[in-house]
Image (cartoon, rainbow, N blue to C red; front, side, top):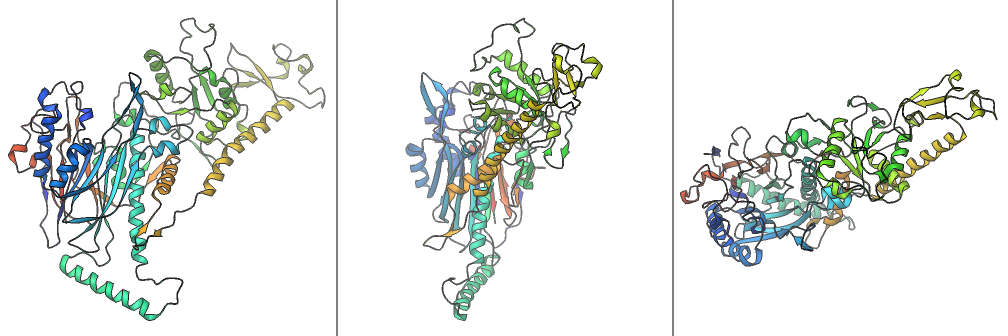
Length: 630
């Protein structure tokens, strides 16, 4: 039988309390025999499950419900919640055009729902968040990995019992795959930044509450009367409920985070900071830890000095980095990367089978079967390289290492975009440090060797420029099968200037875009409420999150279930058992009671213990969490 999380209680005070429940109800679209073959067939039928959902929701007796994977909105949830006295807002997930069956596109029909008792709260404002906006902001690389059709929502509620008290309720369902920790981190960051927008808007409104209009002369009465009335009202509320006279809105964050309490996403919510460059490409053979097998950002890089990170005063991360090109169609881009000092290899998986001399594959790229992908991914991880490819199919694989997806057909534009993503800056001392043909290193030739080395023109075998008479330096590739000879001349100088211009153009476009970005002003609508341009705000946050290595937020949040007693799993299936649903709250809220799924007083709803979900008692593979706040 599973262990139970004990009830965490404190002594109730005179302040009004309210309860919040977070519950992934398991969408009917995902509850089928293929996934839950260990369950009794009658327990996964919607007609049976909706009866159990009715019983669960009634027995929760919660003031606020945060539900995930909600479908059957019109034919079940809308009427049922209205009967119980709830009002709700719903955010549906977007289309999933990547899954096809019989030529028809499937659409994810579930979404997130926040419901509240009409007699206790009233709606102040709402905002739906589509995490696909992260993919829209990532134009050059990670759009495929970030487009996961997950959603979140924010609802601001006013307490009818406590005037001027507001709650910011955030509900979310993050991406499920444990190998995509960076995707979950960015989704969570976008949600928290949106919550922070609402929080700051209320603080700004409270600061400006007693200020007169700037267009009219300020008289003493304009300041005195509103201030006196507001202070008297706040004092009366404080004496009756104990709420501070100038309290900020309180925050509650609920949802299915698909993240364990020790995960980076959980720590980011509580600490307010996460460095995506930490433990970038750590990988030990034979380990299956999520922390080491996690997909990370394309900006998380290692230098080619044995995997140890180095930094320079100008560029931040070391300019010499390792790249593995997967497609032969990017061969020219690979040569240019070698020219600017990047250790760049081209993947050749069929050399051992004698296929090296076979005709090249079409420019569309090779076909990636499982064995070829495995060899490619292993080579990338062992050599600690960044994958460069044009294959969208390749980067969709869950074991794909950190990558840059090249979507431009033009090689010049592709090189600029890769340079922009890798943050390459022009460094003359890094130019032509590698062989552009084979990626080998150089050895300087003595003038006496020029007469015996093939590939040196007769006019240059003396070691001097025939036109200017200046002494010239010659270099040879150390790879024996290549042995290509290079020397500095006018052609090399022109190439250096060309690469300088390309790299400058790549970064100028980013700088111009950043200059155009401005802070979003807070506006007041006709009712005097502070509002923000939601779409513009989300776009701005998404762009900043996608271009950042360090994620942070200024909300002081903590879990309602302390990790030392958080012993009850919230997801119990045959393949996985763990604590992936959470309730976070701001420090101004006091936890009166935190109840895990096995602590409901209605014995009929208690799990019989030890069985996988869903079963005859619980209609979902998740277990709910309930917290009472003061």
